[in-house]
Each structure stands twice: as structure tokens, then as C-alpha cells.
Length: 248
Length: 372
Image 1 (spheres, chains in turn cyan, brown):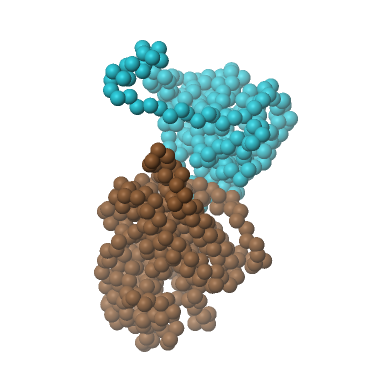
Image 2: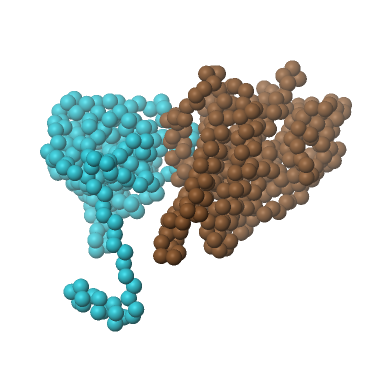
């Protein structure tokens, strides 16, 4: 079985984001970029499945400009067998990303896709669901546990009310939540080995995907600073305030 | 060693390998070191299994040739420097403790004979931590690395060593010590195995670097074979290189600590409110924080440049001297200002700044602790 893991190059989670002065986007000059943390969790899960002997190959794919090869090198060092870079604008919309991944799933005949539940840059959180719909296969989103059994997978999902366990037939798309696992530390010798692993480059056209965006972003702005809170003297004061705001 | 390139300017771009290594080390330092830093300091010991965890990352075996079981990466002082900086940010003492054996391996790789490489390098590629250290510093007020009092005298087929060494990392447990001794008026390095007759260790407690065990080592008529003398007869031992690269190793790790101080005080002074506004709005506070940032970056550039020249095979003695002199002073200043900026809070153990201050006091006196 092959597992396909999409990874996205995003601004590192430690970086304080700044909007460009002309409001045309986020300033990326000299900003540290990393693998989207949820995708790292997805990679880790795919590797664990392979290490348990339940999969033969883990293929990482990223869609973006050539700089995204850096992130592919990182996940190859973690242990992915090979990687694919689909050259495309880095602001490709979720539907086009899902279509691209569909083409790759079919090309590679992957039985399982494990994706991060969302990217921490645009927080769209749509690709996994769209991909499952396009493939007409099962989806199990926000996974905190994945157990494979033959042609099916038992997935524990983090839902609003708690945990939900579902069983899905393969092929399936699973999206990884934060508590699925803790990604491993890359070992230094594996960084060396990763250099010998192949990265194939494809274009959107080769995969028959139209990368034209359907949406126009008109403006970017930083969230406004939160108003400072107030301290109330006692319970009566709290109740009074809540009533004043019409909350009680 | 990379081929000698043009001297100036030097390149600050990380290679792909260095970038991925940094990502790993930064995360390891944050999750596995900073979180245990305080407890390890209180316990004056590294937690059980901690050094093995660092070994698992492959840090010590990476640049050892494949024929000796290593990773076969090119020997790179720059890569080692970045690792020291990142781990130093997690905890200075645990970083130096973990990297001390790598220092010994690096010297053997640089200056050991073919036989010494074959005998010793495989030890550093094992899956468990192999405690080894360079014994350079001697216990006297005016210690000067150029004036080594420990002596080596030719005797029969080998040598006899006499003298006292101080602050030797893992001194009491070390399986292998690289003892610097004066041989016919010149410093030389001897590989001394654990249990050698006449070798004794006495644990040393210190105000800082508490988790890393340190010892005073006494050598009394310690007999070693001719093969214990590092290097080969025909090739002159480059002692200055050993001193310079080990000073830079300590400097690199101390940069990480200073970065930790800076990050901490920036956050603290921007959130701590006094007189109705964050204390960073006061110039006396803001200037002190800015000075830490300026001095830290200056220190970093001096160290990077010296190590970059070393990596290129160029003479780097002057740069190493400048970097070490600057860092010796500035680290102390940054440590003390870190405490100062937190006022009374800086003095109590709830905050890390007092721990960093105590550790940074050691930068000026540590030599031979970690050779890049």
C-alpha cells in the first residue's frame, strides 16, 4: 500500500506575522518557513504505519514554488521514501489543490491519503474533505488515532462533543489533528540519506489541473488589538455587568 | 575541510543539511532541554538517559567516517557551531556535557594518527553515550593555556604524566581523557584511558554548569604507551587549533544562552506593567534590552566569522581570539543584565535568568570543554 502525504510550506509558527504596508499580503521577506505542523503530524503517522509493516511506501507531495523543496527535504529526512513537487503558484486555492492531489492519488494508485487538518497560514481546512469528495471515497477528518485493518481503517476523530470512532473503507482520506502523535526528531544521519532520495517535479498542466483562482483577495489586514478587560469588585458586580451587556 | 575560499565576505546562508539540523535541534532544545533545565540544575545532575537521547540524534557520530561506523558527513566546524548554539539555548550545561565527547572525536579526526582514528573513533559511534573529554584547564588563578604545568616525560616506550587538571567534563566517569601536558617545552595531547594507574578524580561543585559533572583530575606518575601521544611524529601537533576551536565551541553554546536571555527579557519587559505601562516604555530598561541585542549579534558575528575561516582552512587564530575575548566579557554582562531587568524577580529562582547568569559566568574560564 502507498500512502500519500501532502505537505505545505508555511510561515513558521513562531514567527510574528506582519501584513505588508500596502495591504497586498503577508510579508515573507527573510521570514522563516517550515512544514505546516499538522502536515508533520500526518507524515509521522504515515511513517509509523509503514514501520508497522502496514504500508510499503510513503510519498510526500507539495504544491508550490521551487523553494518548497526545502520542506520536502525535511520530510524526506524524517523518513518519507520519495517526494513530488508540483510547481504552482503558492496561493493556489483549496479546490485546485484538491484536484491536483486527486490526479496524484490516481497516478500513484495511493490507497491512503493522510493530510494535516488545516494549514496554519490560511487556515482553510478544506482540502482533505474536497479531495475525498472528488475521489468519491471515504473521509475521516480530525483524526487522533488511526488503526488499519486490511481494507479498512478505524479512525478516532476529535469532534466538538468529544471523541468519535468511525470505520472507513480504503481508499480513504484522513486528516490529522494535533493529538494524533508527536513527530519524531530528525536524526542527523537521516538528513544525509535524504539527499539520495528522489524529488520528482511535475507541472499542473501535466496533471491536467487548471490552476486559475476563483477568488480575488481584495485586502489583507492584521486583526485589531483586543480591548483590555476590566476587573469587577465582586459577584454582584459581575452579575450587574453581564446584565448591562444583555448577557443575562 | 572545505576547500579554501576567498577570505571575505563570508556567507551566512545555511546549507539544506544545516537548516534541517537546526529545526531539529531547536525543537529538541525547547522540548527536551529547557523543560528539564531547572530540575537538572537543582539536582546537579543530568537526568538519567538524557545524554543517550542526544546521541540518538546522531550528533556525535555524524562526521565520523563511515569506515568507523559514523555518518560520513564532511567534518564541519560551522555545523558543530550551530548545534552548540541551538542546544546551548536549551541548557548550557547539558549542551556542553552532551557535546564534550564530540570535542575529543573532532581533535582525533583533525590531528590523530591513522591508528588512533581506527582505535578510538568507533567508540563515538555507539548507541549509548561515550563519556570523554579534553582535560586542559589547570587549577590556579592565573591559568594560561600557553603555560601548561602538567608534564609528560618520555620513559621507556612511552610517557609518564604528572599534574592536576580542573573542571574536566565527566572527569570522574570519562572512559577517555585527552590530557594536555607539557612535553619537552611544548603542549602535547595524550589519550588516557579510564582506570590508568595513578589517575584519580575528585568531583567539583560549581556555582554554574551544575548538571554537567565536573572533576579535578590528578595524574600521578601515570604511564601511557607511545601510541597515547596524539598525532604522528612527523606532523607537528597544532595546539593552537585545539585551544581556538575549543574556545569557540564554548562561545557558540553561550550565544544560545544569551539568545534565551534576550527572548526572555523582551517578553518580560513588554508585559510587566509598572506605573501604568510596560516597563519597556522606560528608556533605562529599553536601552539595556537593546544593548543585549546589539552585543549578542556582535558576538554571534565574531564567532561565526572565526569558525567560518576555520572551516575554510584559513588561519583563524586572530578571529578566534577576538571572538573569545569579546564573548568572555559580554556573556557576563548579558547574564547580569538579564537578572537586573527582572528586578527582584530576577533574583528569585522562579525565573530562569539567575540560572543563565550563573552558567554564563563560566564562559571566560572554560577551555577545552567543547572543541568544534
